[in-house]
Amino acid sequence: MNRLRSGWSLLALALSLGGAPVLAAEPTFCHETPSSHAQGLSIGRASNGKLKGARALESSEAVRTLPRRHRRRCLNWGTPRLVAALQRAAEAVRTHLPDSPPLGVGDLSKARGGPIRPYSRSHQSGRDVDLAFYQLDEKGQPVPAEDLLSFDARGHADQGRLRFDVRRNWLLVRALLQDKEVDVQWMFISLPLRRALLEEARQRNEPAALVKRAESVLHQPSDSGPHDDHFHIRIRCTAEERAAGCVG
Ligand SMILES: [Zn+2]
Image (tube, rainbow, N blue to C red):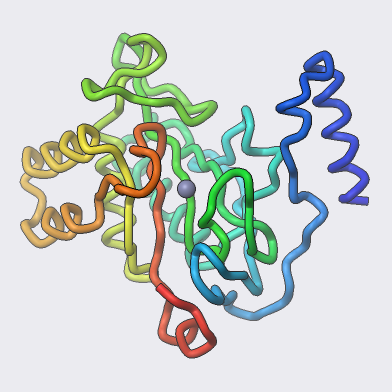
């Protein structure tokens, strides 16, 4: 049934786009269902791994899968720890600033993990997630992210119509770094946006240890895109996962 629905959505998409070949060929993974495991288990590497006992990210006022391209991919599965941490972090942002729009979530993993080509080489073991940046309009009002948008070195996107919301993006980083249930390994982001976040942290007089930790995990990768259109977050394996073959 799910496989059928997935096929129909591709057909509907092709028709709605007048048969545009590139988008119509994009894969979805909607036929997959998670395997059972009580706590959830990340196995292998982020770039060569799989996932047991996955949990789906459920949309709420605080968090949602991005509607434009990502929802139909059905890559909304992660280890229960990662999914719960995203929900807590998004709720923490709204606790500090109640008018915050939902955190926009791009790709997590397939229900059982494994390759998600052509979207990414990693995201295979339920420990990776792409997050849209919180953003402001020209009047400084928060607006929900509909897709992943590139922000330039001045923190502008969509030809200057949108601004990088440094306050909320820092609150998000802080919430994830302070979450005791997950150990953040990396937060990939472009250098200018990293600089803006660290400056925000210092201006807020955040504890030195927190700023130092943010400096060590916020990183522009050298072997992939500059990540000027999303945070790519990766969490480390737990001790139990390592014993079962998790690497990272
Ligand atoms: Zn990613």
